[in-house]
Amino acid sequence: MKAAEFADVLDAVRRFVRTEVVPREEEIEEADAIPAEIRRAAAEMGLFGYTLPEEHGGLGANLTEDVHLAFEFGYTTPAFRSMFGTNNGIAGQVLVNSGTDEQKQRWLPRLAEGAVAAFALTEAEAGSDPSGLTTGARRDGDGYVISGTKRFITNAPLADLFVVFARTGPEARGTKGISVFLVEAGTDGLRVGPKDRKTGQAGAWTAEVVFDHVRVPSSALVGGQEGAGFGEAMKSLVRGRVHIAAICVGMAQRLLAESVAHAQSSRQGGQPIGEFQLVQAMLADIQTGAYAGRAMVLEAARNYDSGTDRKIGPSAAKLFCSEMVGRAADLAVQVHGGLGYMRGVPVERMYRDARLFRIYEGTSEIQRLIIGRALVRDGV
Ligand SMILES: Cc1cc2nc3c(=O)[nH]c(=O)nc-3n(C[C@H](O)[C@H](O)[C@H](O)COP(=O)(O)OP(=O)(O)OC[C@H]3O[C@@H](n4cnc5c(N)ncnc54)[C@H](O)[C@@H]3O)c2cc1C
Image (cartoon, protein in one colour):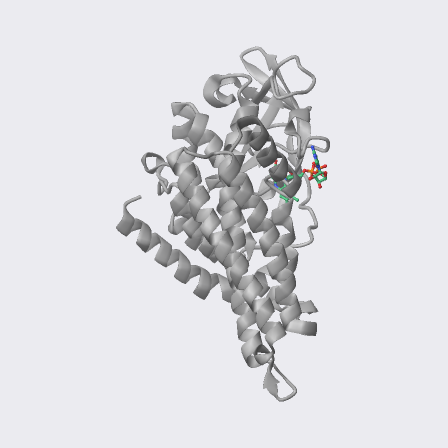
């Protein structure tokens, strides 16, 4: 995106998040839903396709631009970014990276306008290690028949399109023989379960997705090529990790703002608690973590965009920032004292919301394995 154009988008997003979404966080939490007018406004701002190519109706943001936006999205409920996160991230990027021209022309403009794509990889025994997935896609005439069950699929209850990973090869497990398909919502045999009851991130929905002999044409095979699915999933997830790290930084910044405001206004022993040095130390630790995370994310995004590091940087940023925001949320609750344990107080909600970041798009353990393995294999 041109620098001036991007500055306008960033400014509009920042204002929208702070004036329209932040004041409605409690309503989103209670209703477990994003209000329709927020969704409409996000679509009008181009947020459903801000990383998708301009020629297909998106805003064409690179990862460096993406993380600047994500710092702003992270400042409010993660449900806001989750609404369009799969379009721009894990699901949309599969199409951008490997879709045929026909697949891109058919889907990307619709996604950019506000349709929703879900990324369906995880299964009961294939989470951290998706090479264990057992959903199968059997060739049948001029198409495929997909059978299997996916779980924890973000946006499944809203999705118009499912990007589905299924085994086309004869192997029972392993990274080979996995392919990726585009399955339209409403296709016969595709069933979305009730939304999951989660710890946090209310307003962002996940659900089980069952494929019961779902027939799709050959044109649904992404890139027209069997066996490329595992690589596609990994490529999409790497980019997503830097984005998630940036969301964590945004949330840490918000936790800091809430904590500083509380420390300045709440009093004990006749003085603001912010005058106690032990409280100041907690604020200093939140600030330092957010600052380090921000620097790391910007470096990881730059190296991703230039192609110099698409392995260690993204995993290191996701590992550090998701752990960092967990500590920041814990400290923010502590700064708030008993109030920090009460429903309706933003840091209490964020304490629950933050927990997910260490789990999805690769747990902290998996990030450590990726980093460690790359170091031993390639040296430093
Ligand atoms: C709210 C939410 C949204 C999600 N959205 C999506 C989505 O949109 N699409 C999608 O496909 N998936 C999605 N997921 C799934 C998510 O990516 C997985 O939950 C995650 O990757 C962990 O897999 P798992 O739950 O199977 O846990 P497991 O893999 O069973 O992990 C359990 C524990 O074992 C550890 N572990 C596992 N393997 C190893 C190993 N080799 N070495 C050391 N430790 C290991 C893990 O780190 C973890 O601590 C979502 C999950 C949640 C909770």
